[in-house]
Image 1 (cartoon, rainbow over the protein chains, first blue to last red):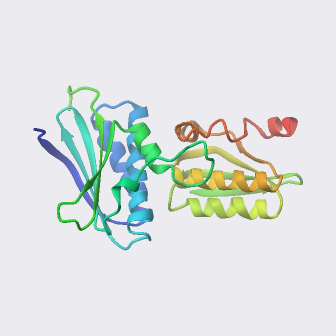
Image 2 (cartoon, one colour):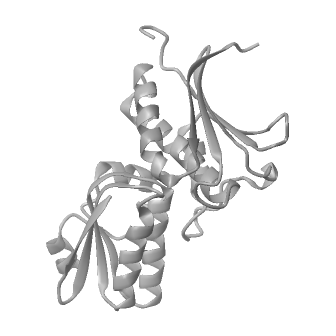
Image 3 (tube, each protein chain N blue to C red):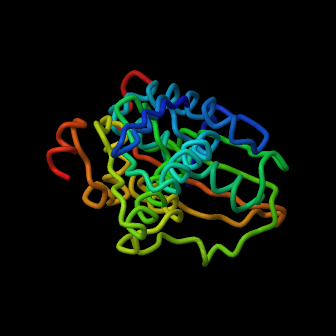
Length: 144
Length: 109
């Protein structure tokens, strides 16, 4: 059984002008855990992309809902959990697309999967929204 | 994000600066499409881009596709390491024509 230690929790409106702030928080938290610069950049990108998906696709427009970001220390990994209160989406439809089809859009899921070790879409127990959970294995445990 | 536009006889350079994310990429997209709509060859200078997400990349892809449809050039100039890393993750680094300088573009086009 995994025991999570909450590192931080943020609640913010689903507005794109908050993304810069979220990126700064993720950069600081990931940096604290000793990840490489490349890994930190990847985690910043993945959380940003997940937030974008919530704003653009789950809520469908800017600033109409709330996003909860939790960062959890789970034994050998950091977990980034994003929860929204948008209408539940069909999780089977969320997947990376064929990148040989050069067209704008649809890259977010691919980028998240590229830089994170796991990306999971989880049903909210109360069925009043969506949860995406991403994790990245910790480089080491010393100094944390 | 800020941007600068430099228009010459044969091309327009749009220099994007800072963080090109969902909040600011619509402004970048608007400039790219505006000059392609005027039948300019467009070079997007990414040397001062510190961060770009998939919405920014989508603006570049849209410009690239519109330029190809209209027989125009759409190139990336001086891409920063941060921009190149995301383009590589998206498998687009081999798709966009990329130049290190305007002279390289002029000599190669």
